[in-house]
Amino acid sequence: MDALPPEILLQIFKHFDHFTVLTVLRPVCKSFSYACAILIPSLKISGLPPALWEKVFSNIETYKTLYRISRCSSSFRSLLQSTGVPQLQATSFRLPLPASDSKSTAPQLLHSSAKLEQHPAFENICCRIEHGSLIYHKTGNNCPTDLLSFPMSEENATNPPVRQLLVKFSARYGVTLRPVLITKTRGAGNNNKKLGGARGVTVGDVYRAMKRLFVEPLTEKQAKALKEMRDWEIRKHEAVKKAVSKIERESTETSEATSSATTSTSTATASSAAETTPAAKEEEELPKEPIIEHDESEIYFEQPMVAEFTGHPGDKVQRQREFLYDFPYVYASTRIDTISASGVQVFVLSYH
Image 1 (cartoon, rainbow, N blue to C red):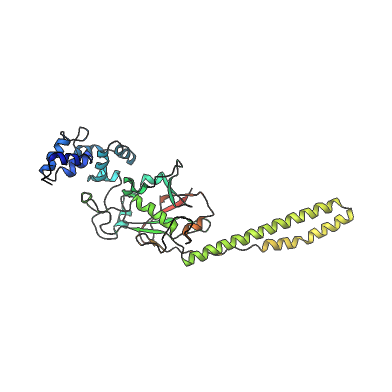
Image 2 (cartoon, rainbow, N blue to C red):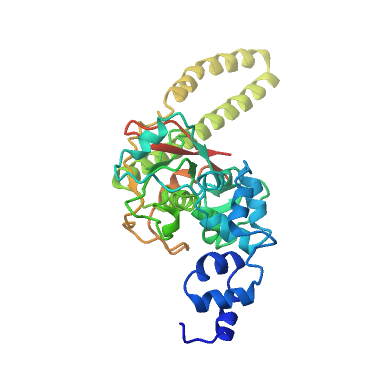
């Protein structure tokens, strides 16, 4: 690289933001430093050195303010994504996991005095159940297809970060789905050495787990439970139709009997009274709701699905979201719940 003339290096460096040029490219060698000095004579970003900008941004206490700042300049965006200042990392949800290799790190963090805070993205984005796609539920606008490629998806889902997180769906009308367990293994997400450690569970991990939860193939136990539920609904519907038909028929017979002679009225009344008992029996014969045995075994996020999800009508494999087809146009958003018995933090998807 030293053999390249400064003019060529200068043209290459123009494709990078100023923060990357000053902090990553400039220290490489003298040729790089000379080209950087030509491109940015002041060696500053918007009038201040990068280190000073980090001190300024460290005084900001809200994530949303930092997010607005990151949209002002590509240099600011790069600074906030790669900063090594702990206070700034915490506010931007980019704290690395502790250096300890013990898997008990997450429970230790959760039981500490620091209260877990979920990422603000979960306040604005939720999942549409019947499609398993991401949307902005507050505005109703569809999310871009490359949502998970946004920098926000690489930020921690919680602050402080956790190594393990369980994504589950809140039970409703007896419907339960298998939860998805996200585990960040040693070294996962450690692409930037400046961060000083691996990342915890990210926002992108949670939404990928949400989609995985909905499109996971049904187990044999779940398929049996779904069939029993559907059969019970059909029998119940038929029983209600028969009961309504019975009442309408009795009402018609009673009205006809009322318009007839007095002698026939008494006969009709007796006949109607006699038919009361069969109606009561009809109600007693309504099918009882079956006792469903759900499969709530955990889905390991890192493992591939048994059957590939094609995402089109030709996919004949039954999926977990088929349990939820009775609730169309329902949205699910996440909220932090209590810690599970195994010490894993739980994210619960709740209905809207």
